[in-house]
Image (cartoon, rainbow, N blue to C red; front, side):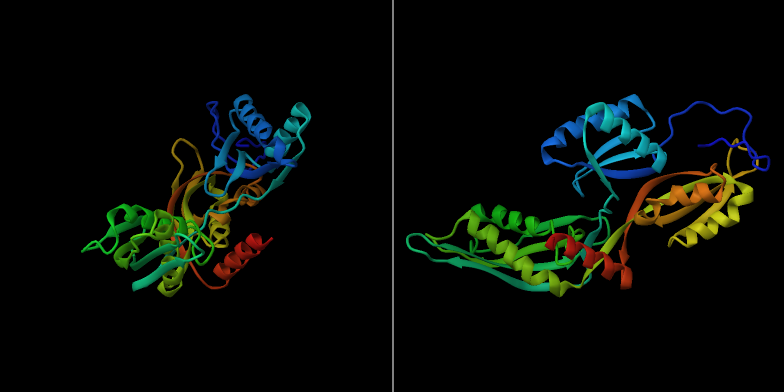
Length: 315
């Protein structure tokens, strides 16, 4: 992918053989759920046979991802898997692991779980303070209970309920960068239980998070694009057209008449970047990337992501 015979493209006289980092991914699943273990084994073997392939089971999106050097590379590998392992496969675009966070604070949000159906009932009652944290701080749970209004043995259950809610917030995505403090509550000597206080924690979060100004976060990558310098202006326009922020460019070390353009680009815009980049650069352009941060996504783009998530969950 890094060599061309075009007369107007300068290529180093000698290239060391190296394993290229994957720059294109497809989510792969078996047509039958019974074949999922077989699929995982097949993808693992493919990546062992071809070192420029890699396989990852994404814990956030619950997709199996096959990564390689481009669409054709992956299509050939998957066709080999279909034939070699007699395995019907389906492919789709990788999901972006969006997150959500909050902008505002909410105080003394109550969550009360009470049920009575003969015999012992269920009772748990909590009050939570919720506030945003700086980006990258994750999730914090604090206990400020005094006077035993919530017995100590039930406080971990409240935390479990809060954390479980944060797996899917009001926008439909995992919630990050917030602090939740248990400030008050009540219990029943007979009817209270860990289960009841877990439910109370979830109820309080369900009531409080929508009041805290939830906002969508998208992953941003740092991307280094390597191209002959004749293509540098076009590549800069390509990056800008993908909502990228150009950080600068410099001569690529050891490569005559080549540049490296550095930029920050949303993950969703990186997914098929290689296709357009190779078309633009006569097949010689390449790039590498790494996760940088989460960044707020607002407006129509955010609305579309949230709507698609809701439709997917309803399907």
